[in-house]
Length: 136
Length: 136
DNA sequence: ATTGCATTTGCAAATTTTTGCATTATTTTT
DNA sequence: AAAAATAATGCAAAAATTTGCAAATGCAAT
Image (cartoon, rainbow over all chains, first blue to last red; front, side):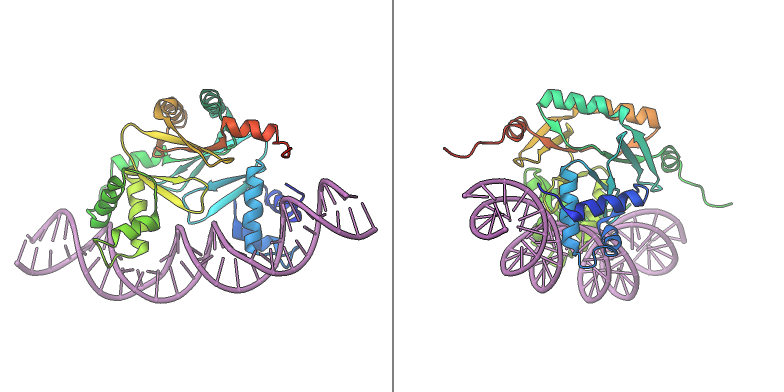
């Protein structure tokens, strides 16, 4: 794998946005400022390589688009509430031992470093078990 | 949530294929036999509901498409090798305790019931650390 | 059975993502 | 430094997925 200006620019864009989650097309838009002739497919392919290299993580948060984020230390993961859309960030310490166990059991070297788990947050659990009564 | 013929038909199609992984469009094709006027968007939306209900699981295996599978007991998960594409199936017993810990720690009720983890299988690990020498 | 309401569906259009291929860059070899 | 080999890029087209909206359907309460 060789040096790619696009990859560097993508990392820079992600860092510039405070390492928040951006979609491929959002990254593409921001990239056009410095690389006017860039094509969307190039962004998709560069993101794919960055992901393979472990520099970027992919998050399908249940929106209609895939989001990308720069991988930094410490690693983190997310819980996404399917009720209210809230996103909780969880520390890698909760996940690391599980990953290690998988690697040992299956002689597998994990590249996934960013887990997205869906479910219901406490508030939405309460709401779904006790539906709101109609207004008095 | 009410009764939907499309949802029932989808479950039937998935069961008929031996509960293998099918893409939304593959399901759509098979559905057209019995529901000639069905639209792709209907399949996507029905799959989304089935997923929310925990009856179907979603797998992005790294191909260009999302795959769907009927959820059955016992639950299982997958390790996908990014080197050779091989898919290992792992038992839920490896994952259950981890899920339970997350639920307790964050008062979160997980709906995710099918994990896809990427990495390198043993063979591909060996290959990547010791690149094959050119043929003699 | 009929009515009223909320959900699901089909269709068309918009978006997002992937793919094939020729060209351009970068690295490696000579 | 050239040449050869390999990987990245741009472009256009294809494929996959999402969205808006009106019509159809299922459910519950008459």
